[in-house]
Image (cartoon, rainbow, N blue to C red; front, side, top):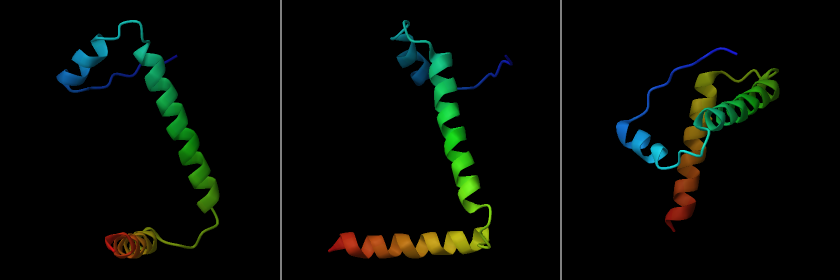
Length: 73
């Protein structure tokens, strides 16, 4: 297994230290594993798409504007 070092804010470290029974390395591995699976699913879902990143951003903005209008009422 390879090692990875990550930086966290001091206040977070103090909070983590309040739970010494936790294996924070395993928690981090599990979170990374979960995110990796999500990204793989997204990659598989979009592999045949002809939509560009700019198209996706524009579509996202339109959706956000529509949702904002809906929930402002």
